[in-house]
Length: 82
Image (cartoon, rainbow, N blue to C red; front, top):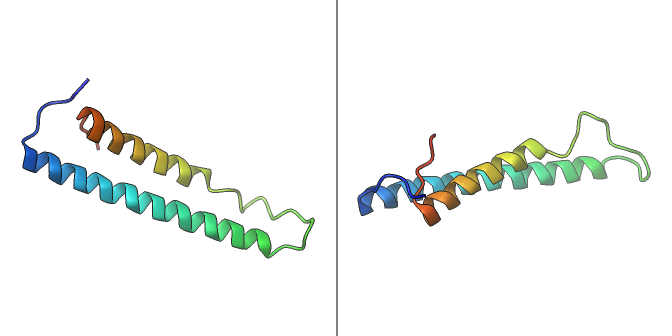
């Protein structure tokens, strides 16, 4: 279901803002994954990295959340509540 109608200029501005948020969230996720992989390589083969270095699932979840809201905005016209 589409949200309230926006004039084209406002919609374009909102889409641009959310595109920037998606890009920023993806960069944070990519950086976290690189750091996680680097940390894992610092340990001797066969040893487990310490528990305080888990895969950054919350960062992936945030990226997916922002991407979902952006997709709903672009495809369905649903305005994100943030």
